[in-house]
Amino acid sequence: MANVIVIGAQWGDEGKGKITDLLSKSADIVVRYQGGVNAGHTIVVGGQTLKLHLIPSGILYPDTECIIGCGTVIDPQVLIGELEQLKKLNISTKNLQISETAHVTMPYHRLIDIAAEERRGSHKIGTTGRGIGPTYADKSERTGIRVLDLMDEKGLRKQLKWAVEYKNVILEKLYELPPLDPETVIEQYLNYAEVLRPYVVDTSLKIYDAIHRRRNILFEGAQGTLLDLDHGTYPYVTSSNPVAGGACIGTGVGPTAIDRVIGVAKAYTTRVGEGPFPTELVGEIGEKLCDRGAEFGTTTGRKRRCGWFDAVIGRYAVRINGMDCIAITKLDVLDELEEIKVCIAYEIDGVEFKDFPRNARRFAECRPIYKVLPGWKQSTENCRSLEDLPRQALDYLKFLAELMDVPIAIVSLGASREQTIIVEDPIHGPKRALLDANGTPVAS
Ligand code: GDP
Ligand code: IMO
Ligand code: MG
Image (cartoon, rainbow, N blue to C red):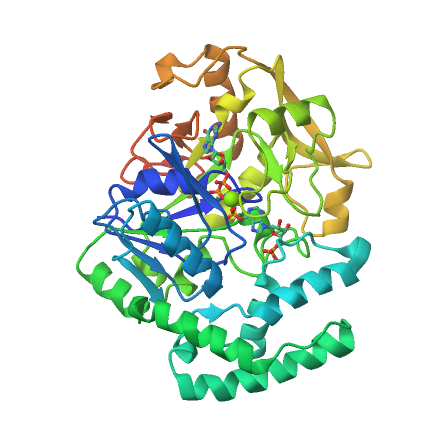
């Protein structure tokens, strides 16, 4: 048995949906532990594309339980839309459960998110406008509405009347927006509550029982390490903790239950929204990556910024997440390139360094130092083993693994399930080697 966390190692959209779907085959339960409908996880099976924002990417397996954990923030309107989408596709949601202590995104959260971004002007974060920051802010401020509050009509009427009136002051006085009608919001959310009620449980207890019975749990991260509120490129981050540590808090599971952390990184880098991105490509090659990789946001449709693989942030992600192994996705997107660059270090004012600077202003000054590798200039889409890969592609992967000091367990060469090379068992295979007191690698 193994309890596994899957995390994004870059700025999100690494292909976590595809990898989670793949690994869900051997999971009894898949749990989303943070984020909200800012996430967009794509799964392609049998030519059909499924885009999920909140429902875990294990939902395609009829016997796998799917849980939306307490660390997420839930927009009921979007969640209900997702349930309807799945119903239309004949995908059962009978095994879905929602944490009663997850916080709920309200209409004022979305309005404030968008208005605050406008007010920030050139300091904007480039949020998805889905109310994520304001929902988590209310959670921290202790004025949030939780799923269990939604389920209590009498309490909700009182709580929401107060909350809407309170937020109306902000909407009207600070942002010069029309106020919301408390009664309309209350009725709308009471309706949502009735749809969601059958799914709501104490998910922490469910997961604890499952762990006790030695069932396999897969913790699905949203966003990515560099978007983490504490460990990312603050302030250009999201408002939750996508890193592996977030999985315990966002589900109510103790750290001793976790067996393995699997990272997911693209063979290049993308970023949506504002913030420093040292390896960003603004010219022809960036456009090529964007076209071939179809790099448009799953949630907002925004064009993703594209750049070379950055091994400095890769190493950082290995460290911050305690990553045991990694999945490299979208290698096929590099197929046509003459040469491929990898950032191995940064430089500021002639000084070279290999650690990710925590100050966003300093990070913006970093100039990447590149190692240039030859491209393979042939399709890898149909490769199904490492032996099928062109030598240059194999060298490229080896170079990334060496730079990040982490074994590559999976290589993805296309959006569908079959377009995958399992290099070694990601769940039970070898882990990243630790060093003994003399600095010699020891088997894990
Ligand atoms: P997530 O947010 O990390 O789940 O990633 P997204 O779903 O937002 O973005 C990844 C996109 O790349 C999706 O459209 C996937 O279908 C697609 N994708 C995943 N793996 C591969 C791959 O190996 N090659 C190609 N070409 N596309 C991929
Ligand atoms: P998945 O799970 C990529 C980015 C936004 C913005 C910043 C803050 O699909 O990888 P927010 O709305 O969260 O307050 O926006 O975070 N962002 C993502 N970028 N993938 C995501 O999710 C993202 N979720 C948020 O673009 O820069
Ligand atoms: Mg995405």
